[in-house]
Length: 323
Image 1 (cartoon, helix red, strand yellow):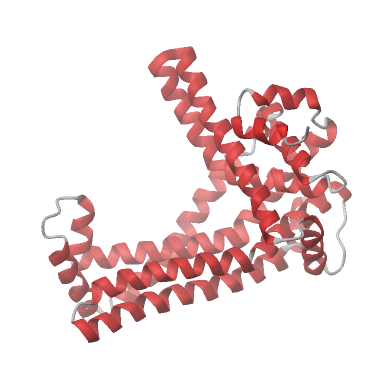
Image 2 (cartoon, helix red, strand yellow):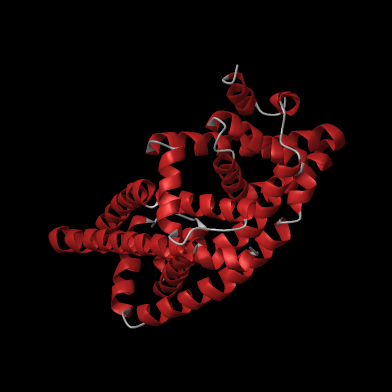
């Protein structure tokens, strides 16, 4: 199966994840606006209520998405992995994906325990590159290392998903050992996987400009119909930030700038939702294919585990659990 075929066959996960994300976005907006109007009606100052509502919304959405939609994300990764390694997928891809996730991770806690370890290892490897640059070239080397590390951190999320895909592929192997193998794959085949960075950055930037820009424009048009509301909010922000000299204060205390800021923020949030649901899986399919194939050609061994022990304390700790 080629990447487009895999993407089409697994798009059901994206649609279901989008449904949950939309519900979460509605919940966030309702709690934020609800906090503003309640505080405005009861205390005559809606800004504190808006901030409280926003905080409550972010907490609620975090819990909502963490414990409900994770199955669809993990299931999609599992099925992309199967398509790459076996060349076919079952008719009911979503049901099989959910079954595979539950089979591999009996509890939600087990799933998040593995993903936390994966993310920690990759982040530590990225930070280590900065230190290597500093040791080789002093301050200039550190700058180069920092740039490289920042680029790696951008694709860390993809590498974490790829590592999770490897854990699904190695279903006969304990999750801890498969996680170690997945981390080693990046370290041993970094040049091969670096080829994916252009795809990640290029498609991501195009997605942001087209999707984020379009929704920012739409929201600005909607917000422009309510100038009085933004005038009231900017006046309240001006009172709260009257002693502040930060650049951010200028965008919150001016009605026009506040309107633009709110429109851009809403556009970026919706871009993040749509990009994560539809664009990112397409990018991930190609990245994961290269990642999995590099491991299938040369499965990491105990010797390669020891090579990475000195480069990541998190990895060394995970490796020790195998003994």
